Each structure stands twice: as structure tokens, then as C-alpha cells.
Image (cartoon, rainbow, N blue to C red):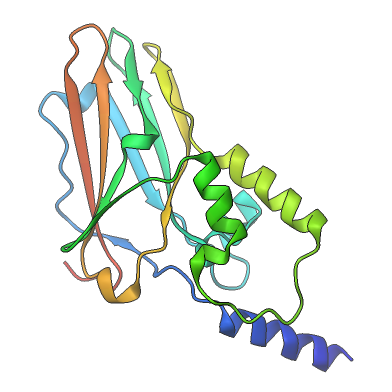
Length: 194
């Protein structure tokens, strides 16, 4: 019986298309004077056995999304604003915007729009638990007071392994007092080359 369960688990994992694992490229671009606004970005990788990210977030996000953990720290003397809805993931031939909460849940529920062979469907309790975790993990937009920070995940539709030679995560932070927009870009590659 244990062999049958392991075989079924192996088949389910093998039939699921995962987001490619992204590695940072050397040339990230931060605007001049941005040392007072710190933006830290890390690709989320939940594939593999005992994935640190899957343990942290409680959901195999790589099966559904290309996701990034984002932390924005305001070290200015004024309030700044961040809108995760304006985050972009650009590749050579396309640019996609981050998924809002409703879109992320719908994308999760529809198995990211790809046909999936389901041998053992998830129970409604597991689906409900995972959707709660996705909602809770998503970074919220809004103001960040001086000395404050915002952190969480930004979700995108899965990047195809064929289109991830070089992708760039682009984020904007607005300085409320001056109305100035600071743009940050973080280049990644799925094969680790630069």
C-alpha cells in the first residue's frame, strides 16, 4: 500500500508543471539616491523535497505561480507609497502585471490555466487552507511611514521555461511628499547565466 501511495504522489508531482527556478543576474538597477529606500527581492521556489519556501509559506506556490518575496524598507524622512498592482515581470517579448488577490486565487483554483492530470484531488479543506495562506502572504499596497516596511509576496502567472532566459521584475515606489517615482528593476534568469 505504501508503494502505491508513493507511486501516486510521484505521478502527481511529475505531471505538474512548475515555474522555472530563477537566479539573479549581476546588473540590478536601483535609482540614484535610493539608498534611503531599500527594496529586497527573492524568487520563491517551493519545488523539491523540504523546500524552505514551501515550509515558510505553507503552499507549493511554484506549481501555480512565478512568485517573489518582496521587502520594502523606508529609510527616508518622509512617507512613501507602494502599489504591488503596478509591479511588472518583463521578458524579451512580453510584460505581465502582478496578479491582484482575486486574480491570484482564481489562477490557483484553475491550476494556472494548464491541463493537469489529477489522480487524487485536493479536499475542499486543503483548498480553503491554501487560499487563506495565499491571501495572507500577498504584500499589501499603501503607505510606508518613515522607518517602516512592507513585506510579502507578489504573484505572477507562471513564466514559461522557454521564455525565462532573462526576465526582469520592475517595481515602483512613490515618494509622497515630492510625488517622485523611484523605479527598481531586478533581472533574473532561469538558467543562472548572465
